[in-house]
Length: 238
Image (cartoon, rainbow, N blue to C red; front, side):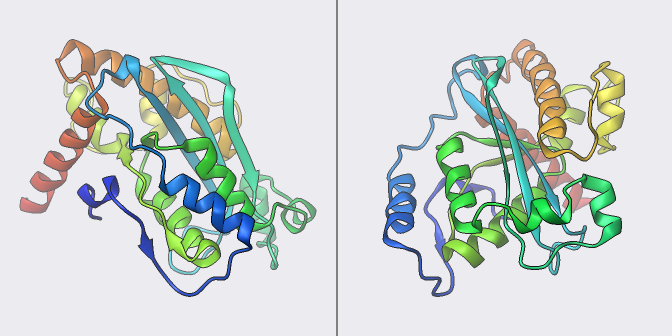
C-alpha cells in the first residue's frame, strides 16, 4: 500500500450516483484541513478502528460493520465512539453470524451504506486511523467507499502490528496476534469479534504504545508512520 499517498487527495472510482445531500457531505469532508501529524501524541486525536465483514476474503467479502473509539490527547473518551451496521442486501452465512453476532435482521435493517460511510467520515474527520493488522480494515472500508461513494477518500492509517515490535523489542520482535499483546499488558477484551469492543481494547494498547514511544523520543503520530515504513522496508529486503 502507498502509505505516503494516504496523506493526500482521494481516488475517484466508478460512476456511483450520490444524492445531492450525500455528495455535499463528501465534498465537505474533502475540504477539511488535514491533521498536523507532527504534533505530540498528547495533542492529537486518533481514531482506533475495527470492522466486521462477511468473511476474511478481502476480494469477495463485504463490509458489515465499523466500530471506532477515539483517543484524544492521550485519553480514551468513552463518549467519543462510533458504531454502524451497513444494510446488507444479502445476509452473511450462519457461521459468519456466530463469529460477530450481527444477525440477519440487524444486517437487513442496517443503515444505507452510503450514509453509513459518510457518517464514519464525519466522525473521523482528518484524524489518523489506528488498527491492528490494518490492511484488512483499510481494504474493506476502502472497497465499500468505492462501491457506495464512488471514490476512496484518502485516510492516514497506522498499523500497530508493525509499530509495537519496534517499541517493545525486549518482549516481541515480530508481528504476533493482537491477543498476545493484550495478554502481555493485561488488557481485557470484553466482547471478542465485536467491532467496538475490539477497537476499545486496541485503543488501550495504543495508549501503552504512545507512552512508550514518548519515552523513546518518538512522540508524534508521524513517528509511527516512520516506524511502520522502516519495518516494512526491512521486511521486503529479507
